[in-house]
Image 1: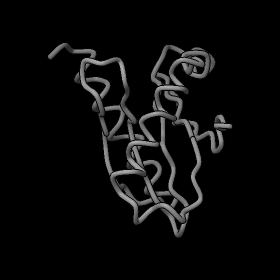
Image 2: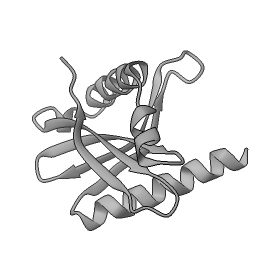
Image 3: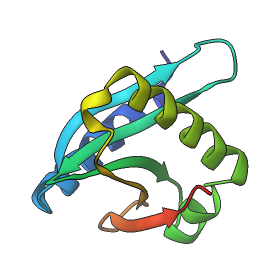
Image 4: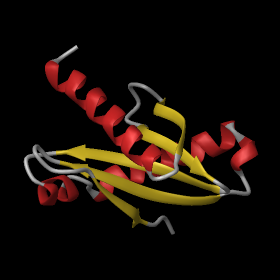
Length: 120
């Protein structure tokens, strides 16, 4: 594994702890479907009450660069992956679904963006 891969997992753990401090509870970390097919991965899936969030985590030199790193293609992959998750775990079918982001940069506190994007 590369040092970037290790750093990514470390940042995902920090983001998870950050969201836990805000009252969210982890359901899955690094949920992957279709490995090798270009399908997708969701960095974090968390729940609070009857709301389930699919969280994309981006770490860059600045928070603006982190935000810009969430491309349309990235959003589509997360949405497709979330549909697979919901099909596999039907107990969440009546939950409110949301797509959030956690932006991270050196020397900065994480920035949580609720409803970072929506799926039509």
